[in-house]
Length: 136
Image (cartoon, rainbow, N blue to C red; front, side, top):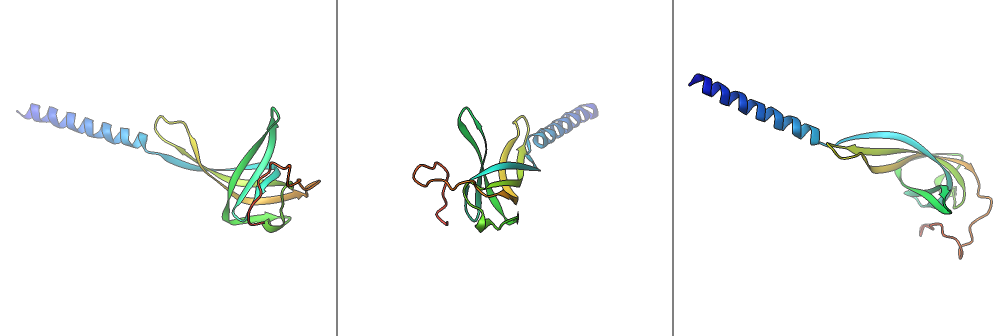
């Protein structure tokens, strides 16, 4: 009788520990990584910035970022930066990983905008494909 109870207890304990470990493995984990991107301003507003950082096959590669509430600038204020200006943006990327899923980016937020140089020419509004903010 005691040995049957001991076996039932051991099996129950093993199942409980197994389910706890499985739950912990499936639980999502987040980490924050600091990165940077340099390029031409494709769109900007008081809380958003888009940077065209390259071209592949004639198609612009653009990164869109929300601006942190405490975003810092170097060289110019955000209101003084315009379309076509060249900048370097330091941003934080929040990455979520969990279980057997591959990592995915859940947030990108600009922390520092370094003005590098003014646009060589301002984009023509009628033929331009860059984003224009309603706030400007």
